[in-house]
Image (tube, rainbow, N blue to C red):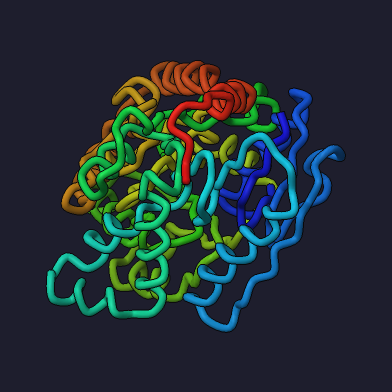
Length: 374
């Protein structure tokens, strides 16, 4: 097939959505498909057969960035002859739109729980631009089918949009099992627990709640440390940690080019996100044999079995610090043998979710010709 993939950034050097785009495009090329990547930022070393079609973006404001990417990606698309168009960023029309980023209407509800405050925020040019794009994309006349990476996202679409249920397809993410794999020389651990948090948006990913949970663990004499990796401003979280008396237990390291090593060195991955369609960091952690703790408002929780390969806590209405502390305490109480059993189970779970399997399922959907858009 000749496939056009639209994604603002396609890179292994950025967050989960950008790495997903890179993995998918590489897998499609390896399968023999001709792939054009319409992107503002693109890493040329993903695969030599990929063709980058540059998309100019007006970055003067947040709303102009979103609107200009949609307009210019469609203009670039007009010059291509392809069999299918897959949008991984907010652009329409397309044959398939994959929900990679949080659904904005739902996120607005979480971010601004007060109805008046939320309404006023809808007047903000940035929010207004994103909501207008989302409304247009989820108009069945503009998008032939929707791909979600979790049942959570499909449920949210049903609740907020009038889009045909039979045109919404759930395909879980895949992970590079060669890059993300356990350290076979790692010694079994017991006692003190090394926690790991990885994320780009500390507020939405629940870092403050995790720090509060760490303070509760300290009060109960559970020995834990926390390693924070991600591109965000750590200053407010350093202040919170100092106020709660756990500053000495936390290291803030910024982004990492060797994130797989961080997974291999930790005991428990903790990701108490307020909302994520499917945080790929959880799947990466599992692939490295690292049990993952996350929330029901993260689609990744659907592949985790509580107490077997990780832990799941409620994310509604918001993740709770005491819930995090309770699950970490449960892990803290395990002996080395039980911890290793969880690590083995984590890797076994990840084996079912490969990048190649994900790509094959996406191609199967794109090959369908029912319900054309437009």
